[in-house]
Length: 210
Image (tube, rainbow, N blue to C red; front, side, top):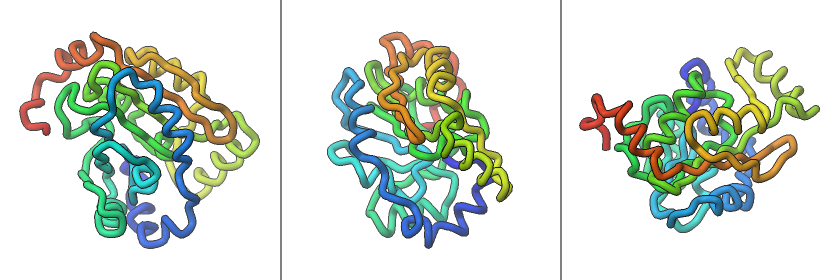
């Protein structure tokens, strides 16, 4: 989901967002999800806003998770998608309860990216995949995007594919760089012990989660 500092911007942009943003790259997302080693029946689109990315996928049960209520309203009303208000750093879902998570064009807005990766590892079932579609700040167009977002006051933190892959690895998610360029795709696959380790760390308060 979008960082709390950027939420007001996205609430204001909600009515126009889908008009100015191109469709999500469904082929790149599908290629990332293909790295999962389990059947994908339940998918969370974290930071999914208006449901733009979830709408590009077919098959699994899709739930959009975001902190912007304005954007979630678009996902529900315009696209008929299930929406849950929640923070990427503390997902309101039980351990090992989903098969895949996507974060599309939104990871750079997350206020605590490491916490978001750990949370993804906690809720993913073994063999499930976290797929992030992001922009490379080392690419010429990426450098321009970084400057533009900072110029309008956003707190964006962009990461290169290699840097983000290292963070996935540190969290116990087996990283695979699916494609590179201005926009890149990174998949991380949960190991057999990842859910058990995360459950031990996050057991407190989990009874209140879905």
